[in-house]
Amino acid sequence: MKKIDVVSVCNALVDILIEVRDEDLINLNLTKGVMHLVDHQRQNVVLEHFGKSPRTIELGGSSLNAIRTLAALGKKAVFAGMVSKDAFGEQIHARLHQLGIDGHLIFGDEDATGSCVILITPDGERTMNTHLGSSRLYDSNAVPHEKIKEARLFHFCGYQWDTDGQKDAIMQALKHAADHDTLISFDVADPFVVNRHRDEFIPIIRDYADIVFTNKEEARMLFNSTPEKAAAEIAAMGAVAVVKLGAEGALVQKGSTKHLIAPVKTKVVDTTAAGDMFAAGFLYGFLSHHDLDTCGQMAATLASDVISRIGATVSREALDTIAGWKA
Image (tube, rainbow, N blue to C red; front, side):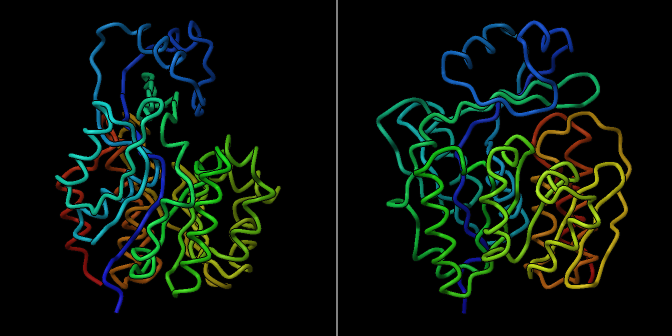
């Protein structure tokens, strides 16, 4: 019997969320709605631009957002990543413990703990500035092999393709998971990432993935096709395809069986972590043995909740709704 529900290896980051104006993005020469990889100096420039503007700070990183939500829903979760011996690194370590997550953190001596400055414009769109910091130094020597062996599911995202060491770690983890009947969930993560690594992602989907999360733009870039055709391509490779369509809901396909997931209407305040919480809701349903249509509805519920407020955390009410969902 598997003793752990989910293990993830991902960037260990602190999210810093700030409400801004569109003019701020122009002044900082930022492309709205995408993730920008920056160094420590550039991150400080962005932060200094906003001076003492109010900000929200929480654990960040795509997979970590999903993992802490699964832990809040009662799933036994393990997270592995790398931080530095600084205030943010200690904050991540303490928060994992507080959330009941088995944290396999490596404390490095170089650079700073990774951070993501998330700039939220009045339309709810988020523009991310990510300094990977010490997380980019994670490598295959740190992979928690025993935890992956004991887990029902290994979850990872495309953001790990930023350095060769991180890629090597994920590929080793994937092979280990496959050898020990641990299911594999792949969140493609971002069009920015797909644009650079599409040729590497397709074989991973084909050879390893059991569940694939993508949005319609990422699906288009991966398969040069519509969301419907992309879902069919992923399903033909043997994985459950989950294609997020934003305000139009989502497509879920396994084999030739298709589900159209209706969106849960809400007022959009901040789209930060919408995809991560969608993944969390879907994986919770999947790990709880719900059918795929119900998994999609759970995913839509959590995604709708998180975008209705500032920050990458779903409400207690939404968590209770998901936990009490009847089969």
